[in-house]
Length: 114
Image 1: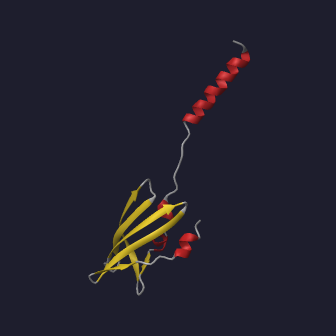
Image 2 (image 1 turned 120 degrees about the horizontal axis):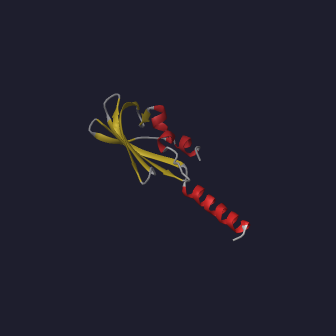
Image 3 (image 1 turned 60 degrees about the vertical axis):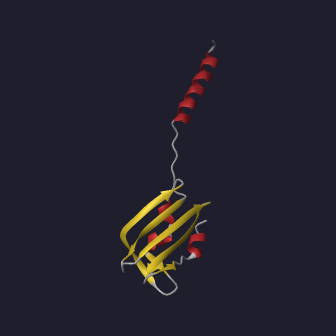
């Protein structure tokens, strides 16, 4: 074997070691959900503040995030946020006076995060 053959084999093995030890990271989808940043939930008629007592579950490697809890006023709510192509779409409901009411989310803020 000549020197260049040994050098080539060494270079390939060295690159292989660096390639096998590479790491990847995922952006936290929770930081992009607007109502978690503001602490506010809105219906057509009211605005509510979320409490610190929330339950967060992630599905499909963080592509769907479910947040449930109670507002400071004591009303239970549940939201689902879907992360698709770096855009977050959030829908949810809140239970007030024996009835489920749709929550409203500002679509302009969510779509501006493209």
